[in-house]
Image 1 (cartoon, rainbow, N blue to C red):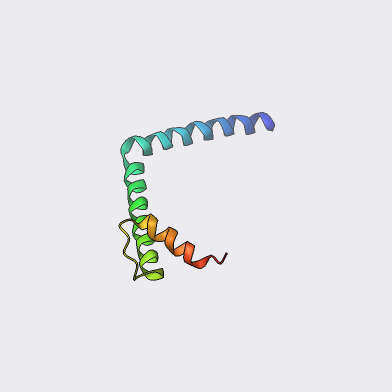
Image 2: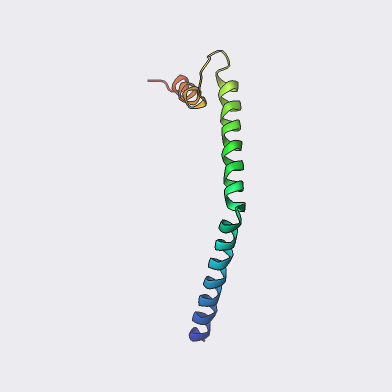
Length: 74
């Protein structure tokens, strides 16, 4: 029984590797990663504007750091 399990596992690994190569090669992975990055950036901007709307910051990262810094009590 374990010999059959090894064969099935090897075939499954080969098929999943081919499927991943197909996704990466088609450009769908890059498109999805770009969309996720834009979504995270938009979310961080919205959160930063909600937490500290009166502080003008040129970058969202600065606003996030400022928002966290105002929440921490030394």
